[in-house]
Amino acid sequence: MSETFLFERLKTVSWQARELPKPIAIDELPTPALILDQAAMERNLEAMSRHVSAHHKGARPHAKTHKCVLIAQAQLRHGAVGICAAKVGEAAALILGGVDRVLITSPVTSPGKVQVLAELAKRASELLLVVDSSAGLELLCTYLPGDVRLGLVLDVDVEMGRTGARDADVAKRIVETARRDPRFWFAGVQHYAGHLQHIAGFDERKKRSLESWEKALHFARAACDALPPIVSGGGSGTYAIDVDVTAITDLQVGSYLFMDREYRDIESAHAKVFNEFEVSLTVACTAISAPLASLGAVSVNGGFKAFASDSGVPVPYDGAPGKFRFAGDEHGVFRVGEGAACPALGSVLRFVVPHCDPTVNLHDWYWVLEPDGLIRSVWPITARGMTW
Ligand SMILES: Cc1ncc(COP(=O)(O)O)c(C=O)c1O
Image (tube, rainbow, N blue to C red):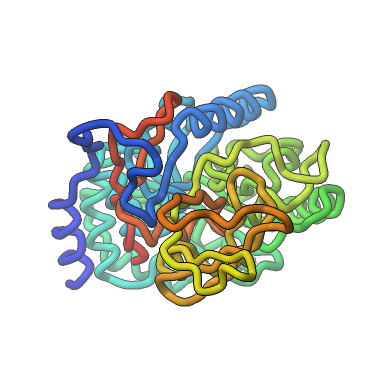
């Protein structure tokens, strides 16, 4: 089946770091280039690890953000209880790279994916999959071989309307099958309220998230009497809120690792901006033309193919005033702030990305920036394109 073809191809892709022939500085990068500030990322990992431990919770970070085996390994070193993958393909990239505790957070409804799941379950020490429908459950029952064990996680939707069960009978059937069929175990409950993560005001976000969890847990308890070992969900926008929900065991945080412009713009518990994590991801572009020099603008070599454009525009990393606008697939135009000098052609400009996950999916590598300002290696974005 076609998924097996994709899986076989993935086996030939390297996930390991590659050393550059010699260290390079940022202005020597082949732009547009995705830069990972390794020290800032490490501080974000430590901060999240401290936060969840202080609240007696776990982190199950979402690899949909970074799509990189090396970063997933770093998250596990910082105490993550497992790693989330959005899809079977993303899980395959992680598991082939040796990440062996994976929760797939989207349901599966096609036989080809179950075939790959069976392969992955044999390689992982713990493979978990969300289920939210009778069709999905029946498909697993039909196609999963007898020598495989898969942990089932009941996905619960309250009001987002993307994935998750809302029907109590369906939820009960999922739980009963997971408990009865020897190929499965009933591992957990998932609730992810993505539509709440970017609510600008912290108090409003807190109220809505706590209400959402209350409803989700009420629904889950009705389906299974006693909650299973894992209650997983939430994201970076509610990371400081959801730890107050006693039943939650772990947080599926993703973007905290990089911090994009969209997240920086919302309030945190104590500040008007979300500054509890650092920006560790930027895209470097080069000024290549200046037909609008008289207006204080230069054209740079990054456009829709360098930045995801679903959530507004990039902003300068150094905080300088000025405005970026997309000028097509390969180009952007950056207009400097009042009184500032226009960057010379050939100069390299770094931008905070509007939305990290889909931006990462546009690049092959992270150029890993070390504290001395040099780049010595690239880390492959192995699960790039693994949207299946
Ligand atoms: C199911 C699920 N869990 C967790 C996350 C992580 O969210 P964030 O990047 O806001 O931390 C996402 C992101 O879309 C998600 O879809």
